[in-house]
Length: 64
Image (cartoon, rainbow, N blue to C red; front, side, top):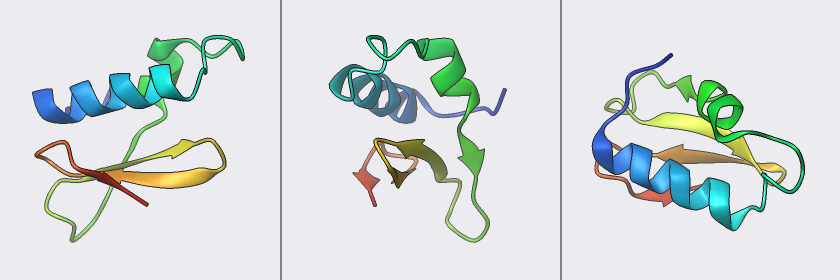
């Protein structure tokens, strides 16, 4: 699994709950495993969520 900061983990958990992915049969562990690294974005990670790609910065800031 990709290493992420505590702030990124909190944001990821919030997006998991907000997207109601558990009801769709997607576990948090599988959602967490789907994050991908970025290049040239200062250790931000990206994840596909509700039909769009989200970038989560080191400080936990989330944007599309």
